[in-house]
Length: 132
Ligand SMILES: Nc1ncnc2c1ncn2[C@@H]1O[C@H](COP(=O)(O)OP(=O)(O)O)[C@@H](O)[C@H]1O
Ligand SMILES: [Mg+2]
Image (cartoon, rainbow, N blue to C red; front, side, top):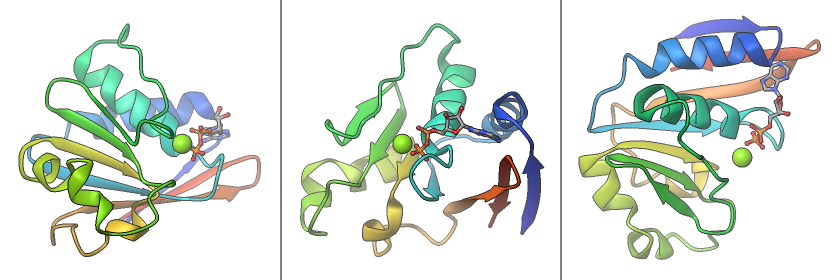
């Protein structure tokens, strides 16, 4: 377990950029945290670090998944039943890609043992990030 205090969004991006460079496919990063904690910010920084800073990274809240040549970015907030996860391509992504998952709780039975779990909580005006 590792713990980081990131006082502002710049520190968050710097941390996420360094973390991104440690990832290679296939791997899964589960991003836990309430609305506005920075799950999308971390995902966007990872994608832009690995696929270019000019990569446009829209929120997958409505599309469920966005793909970037071997990186899959999921937002499972709108998934109501585990059975929908295969249809949206989660298993395929987990086996092949760098898979970033916001609201990962509903997918817990799909996540491999070596999933990297990131827990983001408010810490003063910044964030505490715990990596497991
Ligand atoms: N370390 C930080 N300290 C303060 N604000 C942050 C930090 N990291 C991100 N933020 C801000 O928090 C918000 C996170 O939004 P977003 O990434 O969409 O959250 P989520 O996807 O978890 O709902 C953004 O406005 C961002 O600027
Ligand atoms: Mg989000």
